[in-house]
Image (cartoon, rainbow, N blue to C red; front, side):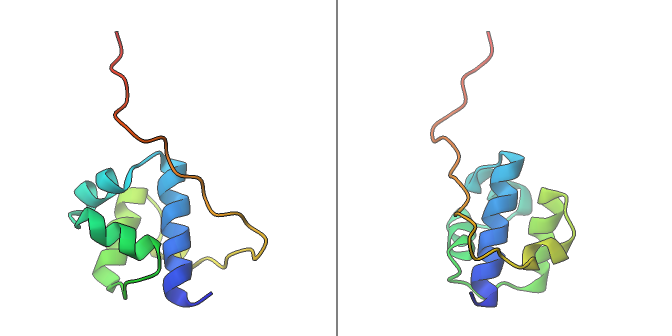
Length: 88
């Protein structure tokens, strides 16, 4: 895995663990949602300031985005699509 794929993998893993959609992560980090998707797929060279914005929203240190990936790990699951139901 190259560094862009590692960052993308970790970004998705951390985002899903927090229960955030790509849209919510993008909104809170003030970054375009389609860009978040491209980062997660390892298609973008991310700036340090973008990494810092993601880390701030995810409440992790930037170094968490560079954590080595277990070669046997499965891709993080996607969140359930659609809007969350309103509580009665």
